[in-house]
Image 1 (spheres, rainbow over the protein chains, first blue to last red):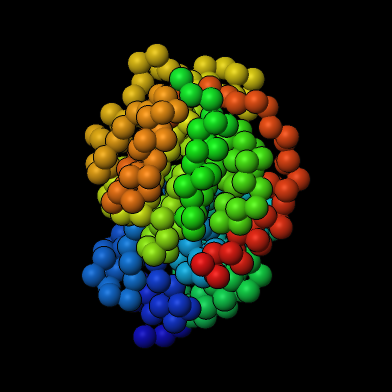
Image 2: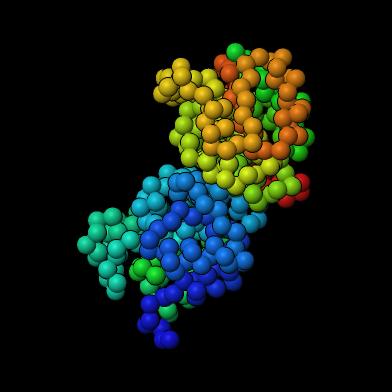
Amino acid sequence: MNDADPITGAVILDAIASCGIEYIVSVPDITTSEGLLWPLVTDKRFRLVRVCKEDEGVSICAAMSLCDKRALLLIQYTGLLDSINALRSAGCEYKLPVCVMAGLLQKEPGVAPTKSKSFGIRIVEPILDAMSVPHDLLEQMSDVRFIRPAIDKAYADSYPTALLIGRQM
Amino acid sequence: MMRRDLCFQILARHVRDEIVVPVYQAAQEWHAIRPDYALTYYSIGAMGQASSIALGFALARPDKRVIVLDGDGSLLMNLGSLVTIASQKPANLLHFVCGNGMYEANGGHPIPGRDQLSFAALARAAGYVKADEISTLDAFEAKIGGLLKEPGPVLVDLKLVAGEPPPQDYIFIHGAAARASFRTALRQS
């Protein structure tokens, strides 16, 4: 396996486990369903909390951070767009470390999100930039190196971060 | 119908070390009644999120009872949280809905369906262990002790009207100091 190979769910799960993430809060996304969500259902390193809507997850993760528990919100980018107000409030204004991992549904592999043919995908990073939320794109194996620094920084700075999954797993 | 501030005064006499999550006008009234209660997390930044914040606390701190002082308009913005909460079965979650039938903080407009809606029925259908309605102070006084010990999740729709207008202490309630104080108290509790 080399650095340019497509990133796998297994290496992502190992990386987020290494950060001390205990809870995964999720609404299913076809981008990450097979590679991440189904495997973590039986992964004893995590506790899965299935929510009805993504903004619930923002609040759950924020509250858990106040209890010194680490959590990750695993959703689709459309759910991230739907949760902007909750993220604005709990994450950005109240300065709580909400860590979001969002699948960029149908983004073209190898194409930057801002260059995608999909309007919804093109606006994700500019919106995060406007909120000063750092973001990393996870698309190939070498990108796994972004995960731990991003999550550790979110908790150190008490501010959200977004990890964007750029291809279906 | 109960006056909300009188209802909260009864609650204030019963809380010991529970986490309290009030919203909007309920937050202002609770703050006016118990400004010293450091285990209060004021949920006013994004309407509707109190029940989800409370679930986060309840899951992460199963040793602590969590009391939500939700609004009816607020809960309508996050009805799915009833299903999420019921599916997680947090035994330590007590969910009060301050049912005044209106968006009190936004001009007093009626909530949709206020004459036919039953939050208790919604909670039961979602899978809460128990759901009830209380509309008199005597009944609230009689039941609150038991409710604070009962395995949840439990939802109680409080039929009430606003109390005497409390001071609007937005600076404290929105401020970082309130959350820092909460976090410190939670770590020590």
